[in-house]
Length: 601
Image (cartoon, rainbow, N blue to C red):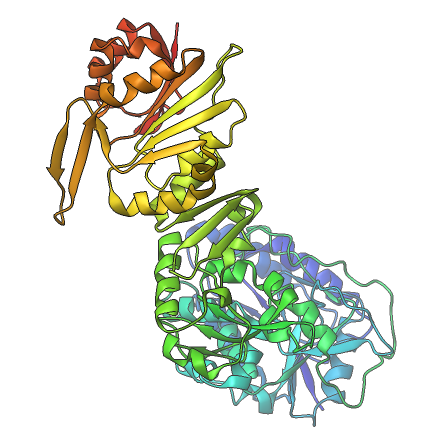
């Protein structure tokens, strides 16, 4: 079998010199060495281009044929046309680019592999590059995988001639169960590379070659110890950035004969090792008895970020997604109406937007799925899982948040955010420097999360909480049930203002407002030896409430006031606070809304 060696260069003289020097020191030299230099693209490249041209004209360590293009073809066209040209005369090729430094027995290794597996049509490619993955070698020097490498690689004419630029190849692969698994296993990054190639964001020739091998479930031969070191990930190349992710040490020990198996397959240990690098843990996962079967709802970045952790604990039966179709990693992508066709222990919602999660939960429950089978991925993974002890789906489609022993039911992303702000950011945490205990007035308690926070403070004897809206009040009753039973909390379903009012909101709901002095005066009188703490979050009624408290002299009896501060020039509120002897500060002045803590001087 006649085998040619090919080098593609352009304008990186230092890189090219290192490749040529290493190649000249190989224990087996190329039978015929073809060098292709792409044509000059711009004048700013001329100095380096001419240095490379001089280098390649001085090569004399083996028979060469030099091809210098009269115009710039670009990397993709240069490689494809060059390989096609060489295959007019040769049965197999060994291909190097100007940043792929070979070990001393690289050519020997490549020639042995190309001769050994010439008749094994399952094998499509050989490479001298050893992927930086954790693998234990066995009695052989090579292993099989499904991922081509274009760094020091080789193939045969009959395999190469079957490849083509096929814009429909990705869709065919993704619509086939076994091929979709192969794609995810060996080219989880290939889909984006392919799409970028289609829209012109890259000029990769290799993506079509790689997908062709994947579609045919081909095998690629790799050495356990790398015989190629890529030195081009230094920002010098057109298509490479700066990274050390692919860096490997070059094997220095020489071998005259490589141990190559007569029959090569892809080992599961290789699949698992590659999943950590460029593959898919879903594709590599096996159906073990100890793993619960689940469905995954959502196939966005949140899922891919935690794909390994999920597959370590579970076995994925299928994916549920509103927009995607076909297969991923051998798993069917289904719609909600197909869920009943699968056996599963739970549905895990891998969506980051909490409002979307709540909508998905409600739709699942409406379709008859038990709430106990639905779990939010954020309960197990991501930043929220580190701070919230549990996020539980309840039977009405809402969420229950657990912060230690505290449980808060929420119905929307706003309520979720509010609960996190109160219990994680501790925005209502305070300290009064005296020995008296505290009474809290919580005006605008919403779902009762702030009231729960106050009720759990050791220095608080009682919380009086007021919420005018019926829906959040009903949720507050649920959240506050045990505190109401013990008498530590009293709640009322009406608003607090500076006058007795009844107003109608959108939807026809009537809101009853009761005068603040009427409500507060008897309570304050009942606790003469306590600190009075006022928390205000009542949609713009703060000014009227403070005014009424000031005129009735009740404001002076407050020790601390906490309220949302809307930075809109509310100087009148500040005047009321000053007159009653308060000082204040904002927790976060960088935002449009923050919390004022006003203390008595």
